[in-house]
Image (cartoon, rainbow, N blue to C red; front, side):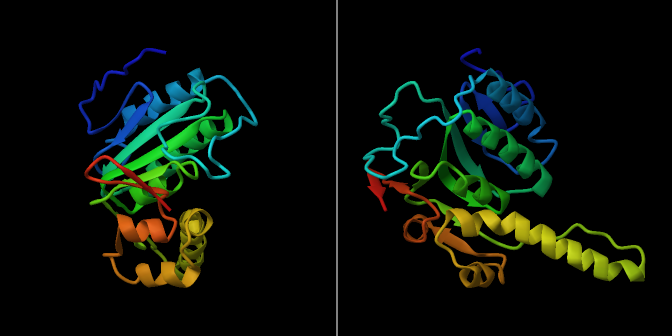
Length: 218
């Protein structure tokens, strides 16, 4: 694989080498090239099923110093308000395929990670989720795009929406320390911002990168 994948589209969501940059809204237009290049990156990774993920049991002192230098790492740098759910799912499907090949998914929230971008951030490999100390995650319910044309379909749409949203928000309950009640409270407003220090406490991230270049671990 080439060291650098050229950002031909000029979009702010792109890939360079093994680094994924999500710096804009997430949708099928802004992420088309990113998804294609991410797919190529994953295809080029060797299969290493059952690979040991360093630090899974704790004890690592820096998420950028790996005990096994041969371990594949995909760095995901995030400063995005979020966007379309299905585009987010496409990105996560490829990142999780890389994970099945033994890769570490290291996420770094540089500015803000809102909505779907926050979901990508929290699903990094445990012990490899980083936030800059002035950054924040924004957790919310979001807007539904279900359109109902017939009165008798309203109840069906409500059932589908409930199932879909529960599946969408499962990662918050699986990968963080948020309880169902805390998540529901955050989602009652469209401004459920949590800054890095609180994210560290709630296991929404594992590390804070300080302005003087130090890592703070939970």
